[in-house]
Length: 70
Image 1 (cartoon, rainbow, N blue to C red):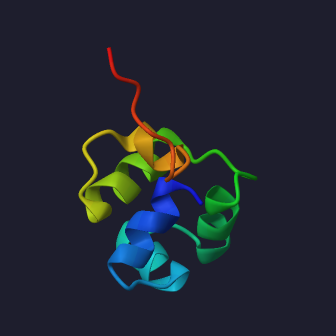
Image 2 (cartoon, helix red, strand yellow; image 1 turned 45 degrees about the vertical axis):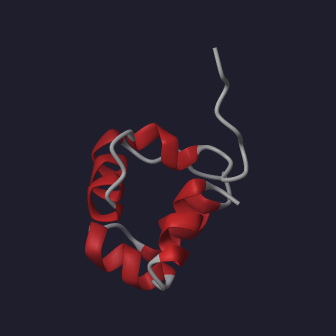
């Protein structure tokens, strides 16, 4: 599961809900969540903004990935 999917589910949103709020095609949300499509920078920025994520690229990471400690 990507962080995008995790954040979407945390809000109780469907893929259609997220697509509406971020102005992205619903089919693209599915492809992005399944790793079959890398979103354009503008799409990724909108997704991050509506989900309240500061680092847009973090949305594409695995949700269970643990941060590396220094």
